[in-house]
Image (cartoon, rainbow, N blue to C red):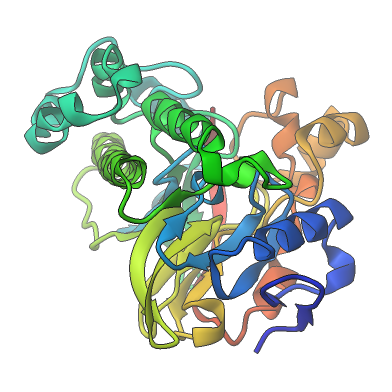
Length: 389
């Protein structure tokens, strides 16, 4: 059950984090979300909850016949992929710099993209056939979207090699829907803000689309496409990563991947009603469902099995969650701190990733301790190599 329930809003807010660990601006934001008349039953705040644009990161919001695009965010379909390999820690060389460089050579990071669409990307006919039906504002982005399919992006996105409790090597990656997803999200957020029924909202970033309207239909159509694109992007990168490892180590066995979105909308049934559930920084954790909860670039991560807790709308955290802004992290920490906190991990250790320092994130062990009723840890992973954009 949740640790606490916030009162004073139209709908209750169930928290899986101690109130004193949540920024006051995030608490205020959750209350504004809960005050929306379309919110169903309650708002669920995950253990990694923190302030975000419009809606709080780490929030799960169910609505009846309405959806707030800001409750998904500007990276729709962002999520995780992980798979176990037949490699053991003893198979890895003492130094992993060459392997990191090989990954960075094959998978563009940051704002970079492939020089042209990869053959596997061009083969995604269903994606590209549907492109012409997306919002007109993205119609000149198809070539870019195709070239960015199979690329990492920047920010908190990453590619890692990890070791589990049996010293088995795992691939894990975190990525989203790249530039085309961002543009689609911003287009629809701006359209929602202008609708008449949203004009009296205290926070225009929480503007909603209403069921049965062309605006809602257009948003859900474009969002579904972005979620499919993000999933395809992750599968493309998994293929590229496999190729890197095979070139480096020879024949390797790869298990089936575990895949999960954590910025998305889904039609689900909860408390006897059909609702639209938005998860912004949260994974679906249905009973028996496998998921991925990463820490920061110097902390452990977890492969989990969902417990299907109805109070969280069958959800769990999407990671450790930030405990400070990127600007504050750059002011508070030094390059020496970054070196110390990423000791033993082959990764960039420069000013460009200082805002991703482990100290900028919440303690992943505390996050996991606060959701023992949401997920069961199956594997504990510790990264030995991390690629950041």
